[in-house]
Image (tube, rainbow, N blue to C red; front, side):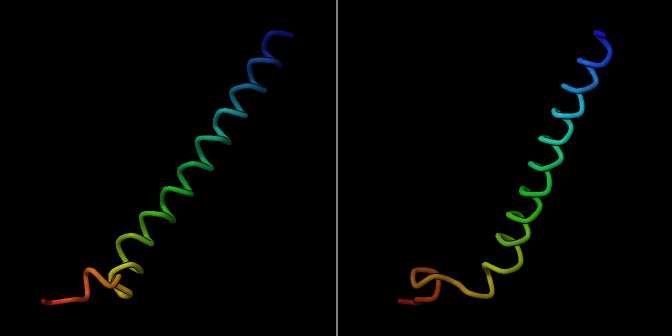
Length: 47
């Protein structure tokens, strides 16, 4: 009984960590690759 409950919570924890890893990879990709292609107004100005 205890093993079933433990495996349920372990699976839930791994699913959450995996989801956060995927989200962080997407955000990192956007910051490193996509954002430099489309700079904001402050970064574009050379005054």
